[in-house]
Image (cartoon, rainbow, N blue to C red; front, top):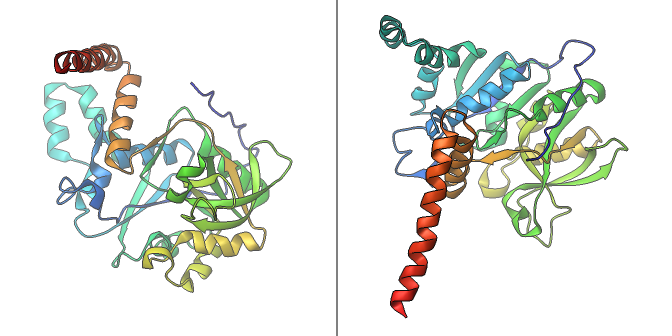
Length: 315
């Protein structure tokens, strides 16, 4: 178990209060499950993935959350709304545990929704938040990255923004053979443990072209100056407006820092990672973990024993 980060309480109130959660993607890697169900609503144990993200924002003191959605994403709005009939039924049964679970999503923060009319990329999704955010710094949380609730990554990033202004991105060191899956940052030290200055960014570079092993993961605290840049950012990799390209321009001016994260992160970006995330979080649950872990050990043992038996019979 990696020891979670610890972050001192800020001496003054947070300057960042708003979070933006892009959730307009088509979820094509999870078809056919996402044909009619938003990928963000796929359950991770017994909560949709997007609820973990909103809980993280709320735990860091961000009480205003804007979700950037699209067509066929109404289920997200419904999940974070009150469900009067269901709540009444549970209250009538005296089922306070499930009643609280149903009410919790709507109580996490002031939650707003707007639609990204055209799927033009993450940079465009962030630009859609401009009128809601205004001229204030704001956080962006991507739903494919779930950060363990015992970690304080987002709080650390907000604290860095309070002290240094500019924008702050989360970085994670990855093996060289995986860097092409991420945005990649060129960095230089700041003299502060776990904090670097970002001097450049590349979107999904090849192993040979990558400026470092530091990958950008889905947590950002952005200065509102990013909106003016995104307005004029042309489509980049994949024909989409890339947030990485706009941050590259900010980094060239020395206005981007990176918090290096080595804690617990769960990836729901593809089917295999999603399954691993569900298993890991289920094992962590005090109400499910002991029974599920015992079954899992037996199941894995049966696979091993069965494989040995099949090889013996084949011989």
